[in-house]
Amino acid sequence: MITTKKLNPVLKALARADTIEDLKDACIELRDMLQIDHVSYYCFGPGDGLYGYATYPMEWKARYAQEQYMRIDPVLIGGSSRFQPFNWGDLDWTPKAARKFRVEAAVHGVGSQGYSVPVHGPKGQFALFSVNHSCEDAEWAAFTRKHQNSFILLSHFFNQKALEVVANVDEQPTKALSPRELDAMTLLARGLSRAEVAKDLDISEHTLRVYIESARSKLNAQNTTHAVARALSRGLIVA
Image (cartoon, rainbow, N blue to C red):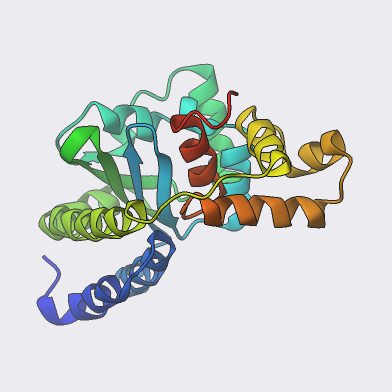
């Protein structure tokens, strides 16, 4: 069990969070305190897509989004149907797509071991709190046994803060998107990369970034993925 004294910096970082992106401070504090490779918290709501923060490299986050790995990620798929914490090694990695995904994740800096705590909240809300590291099986088993109660507690702290932040965001009115912003959101929803969207719209990537950021702000979204999900769920675009 992690002592309260050691947890204080993490809890203070959570208390300061005003947006989902601010959860990164708590993730980084916890990662550094535990001396592991990565910490992540992601929330999935009905119609509002994926949002949260992970200490994974930006290259892996971009690759994950571009390839729409949400559809095949064994951790996400396995976690959504579970109510108890689980080790990633207990998941089914036998499908070819899952094996390829695992190899690519390792190449991009994701550790060989993982432990996730699923959290099921109100109105179909689901979240996954995870820790990740590269080490031997025996070392990881001892680590997770030692800290499993703390991880369960932390998962609920992270989720409660996320629910508070999202509730505050949802109270803000949504402004109408311009035709170009709608075009950009539609093409992103269809899985095109930013470069492909810019080419399709015959604009520069810099101009596209302006449209995307404007749409994200109008939709009160935490990031681009969240903005696309909100546009879809509110019927503003059709993928």
